[in-house]
Image (tube, rainbow, N blue to C red; front, side):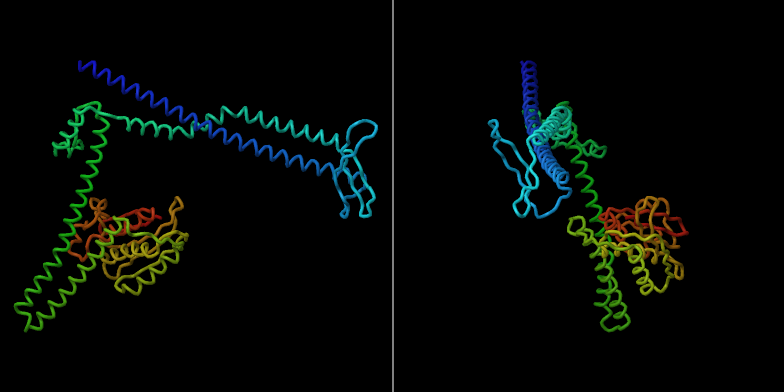
Length: 437
C-alpha cells in the first residue's frame, strides 16, 4: 500500500511539474509573440516613414529638375504649386506642376501624372522589398528573442517548481530532528546536517552552507570581541593601578603624583585612539561609512602627504620618487588616512635617520598606484599573510606602541575603493607596500 501510494505521489508530482512547465512555455511563447509583434510594427512604421521621406525628396528633385531645364535657373519670387486641369477632349483630369511669376504670368506648366506614377511604383517596390526582408528575418528574430528570454524562463520554472515543492509529514519531522541534534564534529568537517534522504539533498546542501557561513561569522565576531577586550584591558589595568597608587601614597608625594598623572593621560589617549579605530571598523562593517569620491592627481596627492611628513616627523629622511601621474576617483580624506597608516608603520619600525620613500606611478597593466617603502626591520614570510588581520601584531613588534588595527583600517578603505595591496618585504631589509587603485 505504501509503495503504491509513493508511486502515485511521484506520478502526481511529475504531472504537476509537466503541467507547470507546459503552462510556463505557453506564457513565454505569448511574451515572445508580443515582443516580436512590437518589433515588427516598429520596423514597419520606420520603413514606411523612410519611404515617404524618400518620395517627398524625389518630388522635390523632379520639380527642381523641370524648373532648371525650362527656365535655366531656380530663382526665388516665383509661385510653385500643383493643380488639376480638366481635359476637354476626353473625360478625365491631368495633374500639373506650374510656376508663375510675380505678375501672374505662367512660366512653366508640365504634367505630373506619369512622374507621380513612376515615384509611386518606386516607393511601392521599395516597401515590398522591406516587408519581404521583415518576413525573411522573422525566424531569426524569434530565435534571438527566445535566447534573450531563456534565463527569465528558467528562473520562472525554478520558482514555480519551488512553490509546488511539497514533502510528507515524516520528511518535515526528519528535518526538525536533524536541526535539534546537530553534531559538532560533523560541523567542524563542514557537514553539520545529514538527513540521509535523497529527496532532501538540495535542502541539506542549502542549510549546511547557511550554517557554515553563520559559524564563520560567529567565530570572527567572537575573536574580534576577545581581541578588543584584551586590548582594552591593558590600559584599564594601568589606569586602575596608578589610581590605587595615588589613593595610597600619591596625595602627598609630588613625584608619584606627576608620574601617575602622565601615565593615566597616556593610557587614556591610547584607549581613546583604540576606541576610535574600533568604531571606524564597526561603522564600516555596518555600512554607515560612505565614500565622497573626487578626481585627484596621484602626483599632487602624494606630494601633499610628503610635505606633511617632512613637518610631522623630523627623525627620518623622506624622499619623493616621481612616476607617471594619473587622475583617480577616490575619497581624498579616507585614502589619505590609508596612506598615513602605511607611513606611520614605516616610521615606527624604521631606525631614526633612515630613509622612507613615497612614490606614485602606473603598473604594467596601466593601473595607478601609491607606494610607501622603508628600510626597517621587515616582515617575516610566515607573518606576511596575516598583517591585514584585525589585532594581528608580529611577535617582534608586540612591545612597540600600537593597536594592531591600522592595516585593517587601511585595507577596508582600499577595498571600498575597489583596489588592492601589493606587499614586498624582507626581514631586516625593509618593506614596500603599494596601493593599486
